[in-house]
Image (cartoon, rainbow, N blue to C red; front, side, top):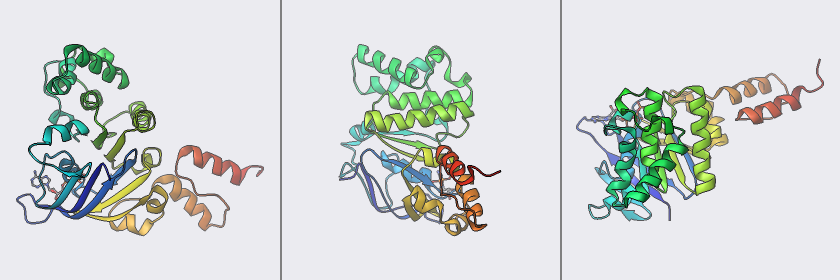
Length: 277
Ligand SMILES: Nc1ncnc2c1ncn2[C@@H]1O[C@H](COP(=O)(O)OP(=O)(O)OP(=O)(O)O)[C@@H](O)[C@H]1O
């Protein structure tokens, strides 16, 4: 049984084109899944189905094998935490502390547990110093961390993040990648996210879904997707810079292994060029 599964999921806002059209998606336990696609491809619409914010026009959404109903909605939202693309849609309390406490308090947890959850979430996101700040006065990157902390404080088993790296500075992005990987490795969580920063995906995901015009047009491992240059071009995406450079060198007859992360590329270049003048 998958933690999240959609079967032939379609969704239509009031406009004529379907925002989702027959989407079959699944997230197994302990996986790191990237969903990519150009603007308007349907990524946010898909994510909003995972915890019942949107209800399918047709098809099914199953969470732990169960369809989402009014009765299990609260339980589902505890299980699947969704971080919105725009942090302002998520943050509304007068202080950061109150904002992060909002979710756990709503779960009916006692004060001591709520305090513990809030301080752990602040620590995990490295934002203890923001505790008393007014959320709406924070920078974009700070707001993003607060929004993620608020969801983490609910201790979901699946964390769904819509463009989590957008607006973060380079250090903030690196911290987020380490944090996400730690959630999966140390806490056994499942992470599903969307991004336009394809270069980051090899260090953040094991599996990729490619969306175009409301459909899943390809899916596979990082290697399987990023070597399909034609497919990426067709859906208005570009191959990440490291595999693209290595592919160019290979096409020029240089013997070098394909690589996707910085560390892999460093090893591949050293192996290929070691000893050359
Ligand atoms: N509230 C809404 N009302 C009407 N149409 C909407 C609404 N939200 C999204 N859409 C439309 O649904 C389609 C999918 O949008 P969605 O936001 O899911 O795309 P996305 O892949 O997340 O895009 P982006 O990368 O720009 O965030 C688009 O055509 C969009 O215009």
